[in-house]
Length: 157
Image (cartoon, rainbow, N blue to C red):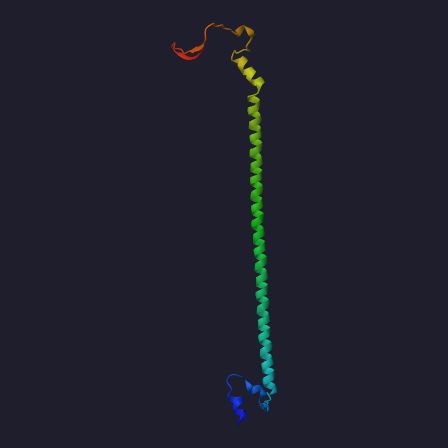
């Protein structure tokens, strides 16, 4: 009976972990190629040049971004200042209108005061009512009201 067959052909269980260990292959080292000094220096110069250019570009981009932010800030502050000045002008106009309204109200109150009404009434020939102007009428009939044409409008029995 071949036990290795059971190790290799088993479908239900993995018996490979119980199989004898195999020797691991050691990878062979590749050939080491020496790069001449001139090529090393050339590659180093290219890296430095590329890093120098990218550094300069990044500095320029960052500077442009900062300048744009400062310009936007200045613009927004200018708009805020203009709006505040417009608000101050409107508040001044409102205070002038309120003072005019107060003056007109004061003038109207003076014209409508009781003493001014009395003066205007006396100037028109009017006078205060006295007891001689009161006329009392006694009626022994039921209370009723008669219109100008003699019609009876209301009666109280």
